[in-house]
Amino acid sequence: MSLPSKIFLYVTGVSFALIGISCMLRLDNAAEQLGLAMAAVEGASNVRSLIGGHYLAMSAVTIFAAYRQIPLLLLPIGALEGFSFIGRCVAGLNGEMTGQLAVMTVLELGLAVGFIMISRRAIPSKI
Image (cartoon, rainbow, N blue to C red; front, side):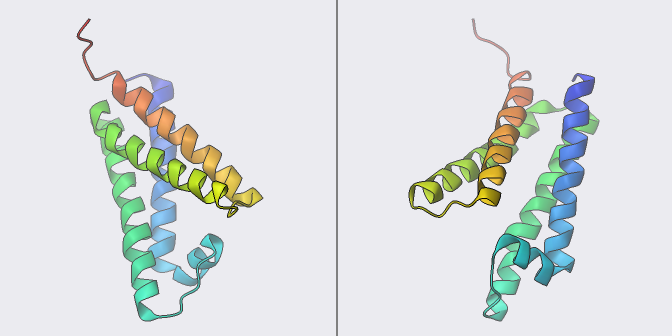
């Protein structure tokens, strides 16, 4: 795994961890940043588990894959980011896009492409 790939993965892994920790521990701040309202206890639990838990898991896998140099582990992370990008595109088609969401959409596309490109290096070519 190349040095630029490792740097990308470590920076992204730490960023994922910060998002996950924020969703777990600073729920009100994280929910406000995401534009979510905590109308019920279930909402708080969902933000912690569905957003915080997933970001912490993505962080752990990303850092582990970089440290152990197992790029194939990054393919599912790339798929998650890719499907998040598709979800944002659907939101845009429904008129639910803002400037901040457009930036997040571009970031998710870049992350998906980066993770998939790095993971593809581990897949042997059949040609």
